[in-house]
Length: 259
Ligand code: CIR
Image 1 (cartoon, rainbow, N blue to C red):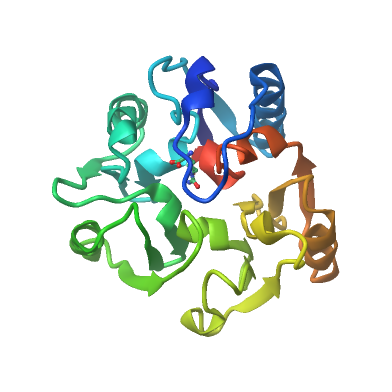
Image 2: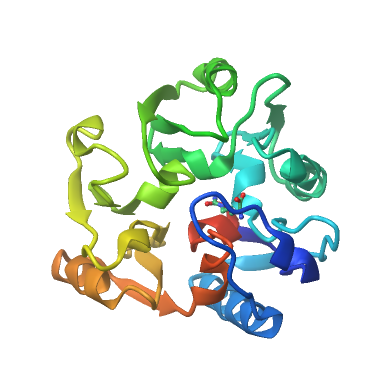
């Protein structure tokens, strides 16, 4: 069973956290239409989409990725780095409870799912303003029991590790080299983002089923990097994602995939 947990875009999105972008008006209707298109793309790739109800008082709650790290064996409920986002985890926890054994990051640890890049048995975590050393230490301890190797990497000038680098194929990443170092990913091929598209390093890889190739869900705002990916043999399906990008959200942020 493939389940994708998502959440309605809240009316309060206009009060979202912003770190690296200036605030610009977000059109709620457009954001919701784009989020619908995103859910449709996820559904068309074989997922049952379970959309959680709106959380009117939690402006960033559409970005469910940050509330949990879901693995085949277990899920870790995070403790988000931004105080305003801590209450988001309760409903995500309830949605994941029937699907996975749950573990938890505890205070004073903080961890955002957006900083956690799962590369098979290796899990790379960005040392960001949201994920602290204690959170990374806790994640390492929790997941060593399941034979995962967790390691931390430096990143700069962006919100989350997955703002800077994501996986697009079995052995391939898409990366903004200004924000993360390729040398931290030995053995991986890295497609560089087009210089005009710094945020193009966020892609959502959906693994193929029954030996079929995977597909990347990708923002239509990045046609130049898309061309680079396709030239590298990556299968890409685009969705409009410009409105939530104003809230510093990308395509990975808007779902938790349970496979
Ligand atoms: C925040 O600053 O927390 C939100 N405005 C954006 C979160 C995006 N999530 C992600 O990259 N995983």
